[in-house]
Amino acid sequence: MRTQKSLKNFIYGTVAQAVSSLINFTIRFVLIRTLGIEAVSLNGLFTEVIAVLSLAEMGAGTVIVYHLYAPLREENEKRLAQLMNLFRTTYRITALAVFVLGMVLLPFVHLLISRMEIQLWYLRTVYFLFLVQTASSYLLSYKACLLNADQKGYLISKCTLFVRAASGGGSILFLLLTENYIVYLLIQILTTVINNLIISILADRQYPFLKGKDRLPAKEKREIFSNIKYLFVDVLSGKIINSTDNILISTMAGTLQVGAYSCYTMIIHALNSLLIQIYHATMGGIGNLVAEGDNCHTETVLRRLTFITYCPAVFSAVGIYTVSSPFIRLLYGEEFLLPMPVVFVCAINFLIYLIKNPLWQVMAVSGMFARNKNISLLGGILNLLVSIILGKRLGIMGILLGTTGTLLVQSILKAYFLFHEFLHLDDRAYIKLIIKETGTGIFCMLLAQGVCKALPASNQYVQILVYGICSEILTVGINILAFHKTPEFKYVVEMGRRVCSDRKRDGRTIKW
Image (cartoon, rainbow, N blue to C red; front, side, top):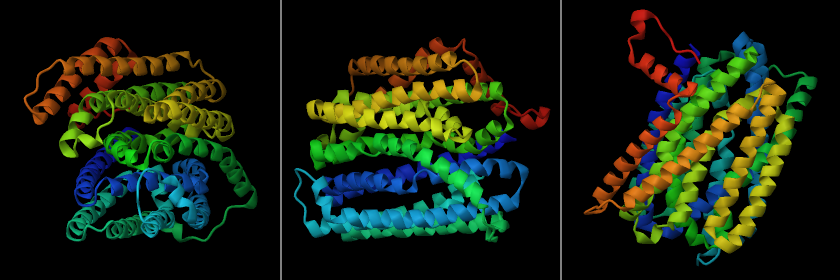
């Protein structure tokens, strides 16, 4: 049952994300053609600035969702209503805090811009609209967390699919007619509000008890906020790792460089958003699994999920390294290309970021918020130091290498503490699996790029097609050779056979 729900969430989530990514590519193309690289650069910069401001949330969502799994399994509606009321209050405070912090930063936002001429009033208006969109997103979005925890994320995906399709069409139309970036941002704000409102109505229909006014006892509130305090450092580290690259690039290499880099990150984020559906689809199931307390089975599931995540991640990473530059040259032009060593580091970071997700997932539902704090603090400091030091010498590549080192260090440390202090099992086999997957992925990238460069291509369309086919064939062969004897590979093969078979005929179901 758990796997069936996960599969349903994955299918709906993947379809919705694929449509959203297609719309994003189209909007980016229209933005560049109508407004130029300046608008794209501001979009990339302010997206990360606002993401940093979202630190005001402090990880409250993760902590409260962790507390939802047990009452969901027990069907304890009173407890769920109490937690969601706390969630609502917390997110309203967060919305206010994000807006206030953003307004404090408003007079100084021009200091983040370098090597680009832009009118101050326009810059501040654009930033203000980004701020309004983010702050307003907290007002109703908390109810989506309950749907995800209850493995009903497919309802969110359906809603997002239709709203995003409608708003995307409207955005493209208004950009072509008005060539006005501010109008485009106003549409994004309206989209965010409508989407969250519809999801809120869906949640109210699914869970009528949400209308209750019950409050958590003071002692339990203190326990939850104590965990939030521990998790804040983890959230801070995540923001430093994932939401500072564009800020550092803008201040150290020039704001227009953000535009070129964001063309690559758009591809990376599109693929990441598709593949992260594995994470979202299984999050509720993993939470329930951990709550059952079978540590050996939890380890087995973690290893399986790590390999399942790796399989599409390595194909995507190789594709990013070999195909993204020809694709960007065709779609946007030569001025948006990055050096291949920079693209290589982007692909490595993408691969490691996805491989680590199952580990982060189990840590998030294990309740080890205090232990996460020191690991996250170390990672955040390491990322900033390495990014700034290497960024001064190597530019964008140095900034990205800071992210690479941090992801590797945090993955090894989190695996150690999860296995030794929560599962009480040996972590060496799991760490070897992560290292083997990362090493195999890097080898696939280098071999595929070397072979692709030697292949003839009559035009850019043929080049993209040939490079894509060649790199994926090589990746399939290398990974079969590297993993065919592992239990994780055998499990994936067996799961594929069962999915393709007529399960109604023999009554079989896939079990994690």
